[in-house]
Every structure is written in C-alpha cells, then in structure tokens.
Length: 114
Length: 113
Image (cartoon, rainbow over all chains, first blue to last red; front, side, top):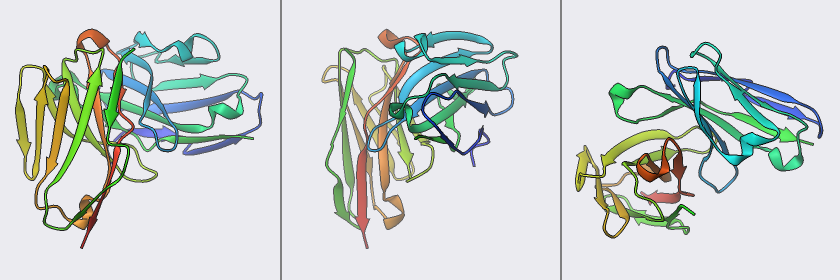
C-alpha cells in the first residue's frame, strides 16, 4: 500500500453514462498524475497537476474527459458520455519534489463500459 | 512522436541468473528515466530513477544504465528470484517532454525456480 487511494475500485456503467473517479494522494504531495492503462500496455498519460494547477494534459482531456484538483489535495476524473473504448484501468499517482520525480501509484479504478 | 520500446516478448530465466531488460526511446530527450514494477491487477511500484547526467545507478540487486547517445537504458536484476516475476515498465519524464510521463508497454519477466 503506497498511501494513494482511489475510489471506486471497480465501476460498471452503460454506454453514454457519465462516471467520476476520485483520487486521494499521499498527504502533502504536490504532484498528481492520472493515467489510463489497457491490457498489455503501459500507463498512458492523461493529465498532471502541481498543487491545484493543471499544467499538462493529453489530447484525450480536451473532449469527454476532465479532471480537477480544486484545493490541491484530492482529485477527480470525469468521463462524460462513456464509450466501450473507455473500458480500462484508471490510475492515479502522486509525488513530491523531495523524492526526485518518483511517482507513487494508487491501486486503480477498473472501468467497464457495457 | 515520442516513443518507447521495450522487449515485447516475455523473458524467461532461471533462478540465480541475471535478468537484463532493455528500454529504447526515440524523439525524446528526457530529464529522468525510471523503472517500475507492476504485478497483475495492481498499480506500478517505483524501483529506480536515473537522471540524464548519470550513467549508472544501483540499488541492492538492481542496476540501471542510461546512455543518452544511444537513447537506451538497461535494467539488470542480479541473483534473480521467482518473486521477481512481474512486468517491468520503463518511463521517461521531463526534458523535451515537459511534465508528461511516457511509459513503455513493459516486459514480462518469469523467473523459474
């Protein structure tokens, strides 16, 4: 257990529904990342926050995906109008600058879109 | 576009031998290169980080080399054990990639007793 928690651990939804995932990073970690991972692939970068500022995001977050970190602590990732291709493991990671750029990953939220 | 390549085929070795995994990248000048371990159904776990101005780093049975001219990193596990069986991911961060972290697809390692 790295200390990063994610909720829910599993989510099954029907196509077209909206889903929201939550990530609680290690306390006082100022860096927070979201990734998506499918079977046989490495994590795919979605977005990066430094405190409450979203400093980097992939093209995926320009449409149905959005992420927030309102107070620089927990973060949420929302997927609107889900599609079957969104089925994946969604991973959150946090880090602080004192550890270099080490990232501590949570257990992930597995999303299944029917 | 930025790309990372890791051995796509699984690596099978005998207990006690040294496992060597390769990570090659293109169109990228990272500030850091990291190696992570991932077990099925779990998030990746950080193992080692090496910076662009470092050639080699060691931690217990692990050794990482980083050649920015060849754009390659080698990851070694000495005296391998069955418990080392997992997927090992290479990741690049910083430098020309900004704040993004780019992961390879990973190499599956099986250590036989």
